Picture 1 (cartoon, rainbow, N blue to C red):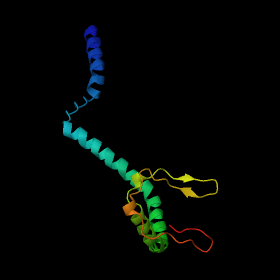
Picture 2: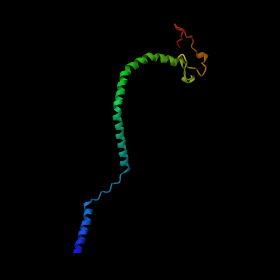
Picture 3: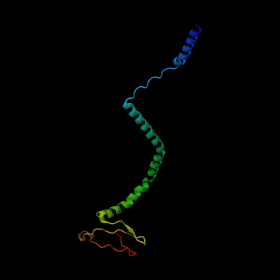
Picture 4: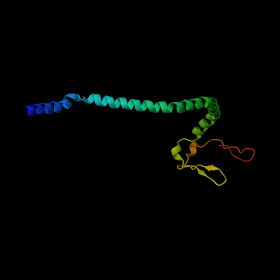
Length: 135
Protein backbone atom coordinates (compact mmCIF):
# COMPACT_ATOMS: atom_id res chain seq x y z
CA UNK A 1 0.00 0.00 0.00
CA UNK A 2 2.84 2.34 0.68
CA UNK A 3 4.07 1.71 -2.81
CA UNK A 4 0.68 2.78 -4.06
CA UNK A 5 0.83 6.01 -2.06
CA UNK A 6 4.31 6.74 -3.36
CA UNK A 7 3.21 6.04 -6.91
CA UNK A 8 0.17 8.33 -6.52
CA UNK A 9 2.34 11.05 -5.01
CA UNK A 10 4.86 10.80 -7.86
CA UNK A 11 2.08 11.02 -10.44
CA UNK A 12 0.50 14.05 -8.74
CA UNK A 13 3.85 15.83 -8.47
CA UNK A 14 4.72 15.02 -12.08
CA UNK A 15 1.39 16.33 -13.33
CA UNK A 16 1.47 19.55 -11.30
CA UNK A 17 3.95 21.46 -13.51
CA UNK A 18 2.08 20.34 -16.60
CA UNK A 19 -1.16 21.73 -15.16
CA UNK A 20 0.51 24.98 -14.12
CA UNK A 21 1.72 25.69 -17.63
CA UNK A 22 -0.86 27.02 -19.97
CA UNK A 23 -0.62 26.04 -23.56
CA UNK A 24 0.35 28.96 -25.77
CA UNK A 25 -2.18 29.63 -28.46
CA UNK A 26 -0.92 28.78 -31.91
CA UNK A 27 -0.20 31.90 -33.93
CA UNK A 28 -2.88 32.61 -36.47
CA UNK A 29 -1.65 32.37 -40.04
CA UNK A 30 -1.08 35.85 -41.41
CA UNK A 31 -2.51 36.81 -44.72
CA UNK A 32 -0.08 38.28 -47.23
CA UNK A 33 -2.01 41.56 -47.14
CA UNK A 34 -1.35 41.94 -43.42
CA UNK A 35 2.40 41.55 -43.99
CA UNK A 36 2.40 44.20 -46.68
CA UNK A 37 0.29 46.56 -44.57
CA UNK A 38 2.82 46.26 -41.75
CA UNK A 39 5.60 47.14 -44.18
CA UNK A 40 3.55 50.07 -45.47
CA UNK A 41 3.04 51.30 -41.93
CA UNK A 42 6.76 51.01 -41.27
CA UNK A 43 7.59 53.02 -44.40
CA UNK A 44 5.03 55.68 -43.45
CA UNK A 45 6.60 56.00 -40.01
CA UNK A 46 10.07 56.19 -41.55
CA UNK A 47 9.09 58.96 -43.97
CA UNK A 48 7.23 60.85 -41.25
CA UNK A 49 10.44 60.76 -39.22
CA UNK A 50 12.43 62.10 -42.19
CA UNK A 51 9.95 64.92 -42.69
CA UNK A 52 10.00 65.77 -39.00
CA UNK A 53 13.80 65.98 -39.10
CA UNK A 54 13.91 67.95 -42.36
CA UNK A 55 11.09 70.41 -41.57
CA UNK A 56 13.25 73.02 -39.74
CA UNK A 57 15.75 73.12 -42.61
CA UNK A 58 12.93 73.45 -45.15
CA UNK A 59 11.40 76.29 -43.13
CA UNK A 60 14.76 78.11 -43.01
CA UNK A 61 15.20 77.70 -46.76
CA UNK A 62 11.71 79.07 -47.43
CA UNK A 63 12.44 82.07 -45.19
CA UNK A 64 15.74 82.75 -46.99
CA UNK A 65 14.03 82.59 -50.38
CA UNK A 66 11.36 85.03 -49.22
CA UNK A 67 14.06 87.43 -48.04
CA UNK A 68 15.93 87.11 -51.35
CA UNK A 69 12.83 87.55 -53.55
CA UNK A 70 13.09 91.38 -53.97
CA UNK A 71 16.78 91.13 -54.92
CA UNK A 72 16.05 88.35 -57.40
CA UNK A 73 13.21 90.37 -58.95
CA UNK A 74 15.50 93.40 -59.36
CA UNK A 75 18.22 91.24 -60.89
CA UNK A 76 15.73 89.78 -63.37
CA UNK A 77 14.56 93.25 -64.38
CA UNK A 78 18.16 94.38 -64.91
CA UNK A 79 19.50 91.32 -66.69
CA UNK A 80 16.34 90.25 -68.52
CA UNK A 81 16.65 92.63 -71.50
CA UNK A 82 20.36 91.83 -71.90
CA UNK A 83 19.66 88.10 -71.92
CA UNK A 84 17.00 88.68 -74.58
CA UNK A 85 19.56 90.57 -76.71
CA UNK A 86 22.06 87.74 -76.24
CA UNK A 87 19.57 85.12 -77.41
CA UNK A 88 18.80 87.27 -80.46
CA UNK A 89 22.52 87.32 -81.37
CA UNK A 90 23.14 83.63 -80.65
CA UNK A 91 20.97 81.54 -82.90
CA UNK A 92 21.88 78.12 -81.47
CA UNK A 93 24.32 77.37 -78.66
CA UNK A 94 25.37 74.11 -80.35
CA UNK A 95 27.09 76.27 -83.02
CA UNK A 96 29.67 77.41 -80.45
CA UNK A 97 32.63 75.82 -78.68
CA UNK A 98 33.16 75.92 -74.94
CA UNK A 99 34.32 79.33 -73.68
CA UNK A 100 38.05 79.91 -73.20
CA UNK A 101 39.40 82.38 -70.64
CA UNK A 102 42.40 84.25 -72.01
CA UNK A 103 45.33 85.28 -69.77
CA UNK A 104 44.09 88.89 -69.70
CA UNK A 105 40.69 87.71 -68.37
CA UNK A 106 38.75 88.02 -71.62
CA UNK A 107 36.36 85.21 -72.44
CA UNK A 108 36.49 83.91 -75.99
CA UNK A 109 33.64 81.85 -77.42
CA UNK A 110 34.49 80.47 -80.88
CA UNK A 111 31.84 79.61 -83.40
CA UNK A 112 32.09 76.05 -84.75
CA UNK A 113 30.07 76.68 -87.90
CA UNK A 114 30.68 79.74 -90.06
CA UNK A 115 28.15 82.53 -89.82
CA UNK A 116 25.96 83.02 -92.88
CA UNK A 117 26.92 86.41 -94.37
CA UNK A 118 23.24 87.18 -95.01
CA UNK A 119 22.52 86.79 -91.29
CA UNK A 120 25.37 89.11 -90.24
CA UNK A 121 24.35 92.33 -88.49
CA UNK A 122 23.75 95.19 -90.91
CA UNK A 123 25.58 97.78 -88.80
CA UNK A 124 29.12 97.53 -87.56
CA UNK A 125 29.59 97.83 -83.80
CA UNK A 126 30.81 101.24 -82.72
CA UNK A 127 33.85 101.53 -80.43
CA UNK A 128 33.19 102.96 -76.97
CA UNK A 129 35.09 105.82 -75.26
CA UNK A 130 38.05 103.58 -74.33
CA UNK A 131 38.12 101.76 -77.67
CA UNK A 132 36.15 98.71 -76.49
CA UNK A 133 33.41 97.28 -78.69
CA UNK A 134 30.04 96.47 -77.14
CA UNK A 135 28.62 93.23 -78.54
